[in-house]
Length: 64
Image 1: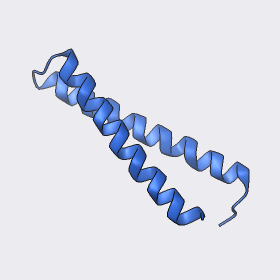
Image 2: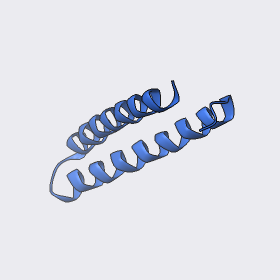
Image 3: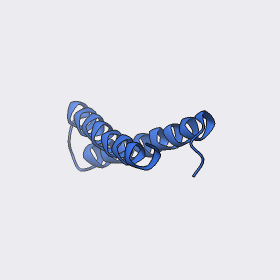
């Protein structure tokens, strides 16, 4: 795998989109199942932080 700057940026952007998609899905599921807006916000934020941490960890292992 190429380890240049462009590859790293593209992987970070795609990881960010993956985390954003997961967080929006979790927030919508929390809201649809009867939770309020604050519960949906907290579920979405927690999912974003957790999935972004996993993405950063995987990219760190793969690229360094």
